[in-house]
Length: 309
Image (cartoon, rainbow, N blue to C red):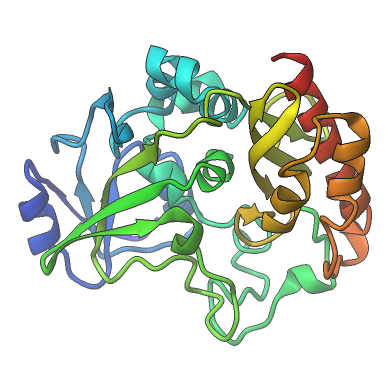
């Protein structure tokens, strides 16, 4: 780990005003500290934001509001989350060990860096770590939670900087690699995540998060699905579907949502709706199984949700 300066702040204004290029914000530290030890990230200055007033879990007519410094375990246990947004609680409980969930913040979870092993190995080329050096995952081992259900539920992220505040839909918060693979989101220099809002909806309470992985615990997703249905009798009035583990960001499947809408909630409907879920996918050598697995995961999630109604 390289030398750096350390500072504690007590207000959002103080945090963003003093942030310069090379500054990193520290909350739970479950990602930042690991990457600093590996020298994947080497900030000149670390600003501890744990004393900022960015906590709170509230539910009102607009929806669910969660402060960026709320710990994952507390959000998962909150009655309002478990009752009105069950797939958020499910995703949090499946995302890490109990020890990490007790430390990690909601804001930090949304900003965690790529889980690719080549990114964490400074001896290998990685465009995210060193733009233009190449991507080892393309020909190497290219198999690689909370954001997935949040995207399905049209969550917005609240941001603050010295220039003011703004709100961004989570679905557009994450960026595709393109010509700038080192840029993973739309955060501006020294901008701080202050919280999220998940809007109220008739489908949020009837939702489920399913995570498929190599082993039962403490493992990243091979595929995951966040599904929510608004039913009138047996008819699907509206649907929200997002998936993870299959792209560089959580992916909303609007075509699947349209195929479900207006149809009866049956196995035949589910199978037909997800048939084209992976259309256009270009899997690499070690993840060619994922399109088929994604379709099966979606059908299983929708079936379990319907059976648990």
